[in-house]
Amino acid sequence: MKTSHKNIGFTLIELLVTLVIVGILSSTSYKAYGKFKKESTREEAKIALVSTHSYAERYLMEANTNDITSVSIPDELQTKNYNISIVETPDSTHGIFYLQATVRSDSKQVDDIATCQTILLYQDGFRTNTPAGASNVCW
Figure (cartoon, rainbow, N blue to C red):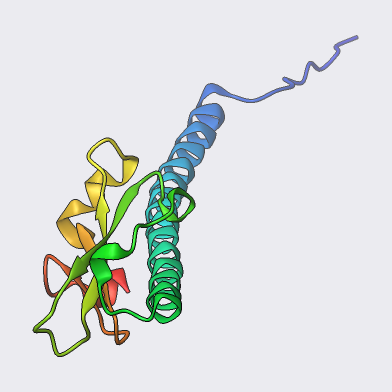
């Protein structure tokens, strides 16, 4: 009496095809995750700019002054990937100061320098960035 013997399991070809598919899916999802991470870190900087803007306006109003150099940014408004600073602009059409978020050199966001090295928020709400021309990406 003959017994038939069926092979149970996967062939090497099936395993290799599965491995290739998993590799392709992993590489595309990793790129998408990297882009998402970069954008979320940029959002963190924008939130810090808006919070610092509110803080500076409140300080100037309560101190009844226009001396922006007297405003110091509290540590809790700084981020780990961007330096937030206030710059006086007495001749600007956008107010007496602007806030800037500059990528820190030791940050993981340093590869974002080509597009959004510095994000700017002026006193009147005007938004831009350097290098110029990438506003639609940064804001």
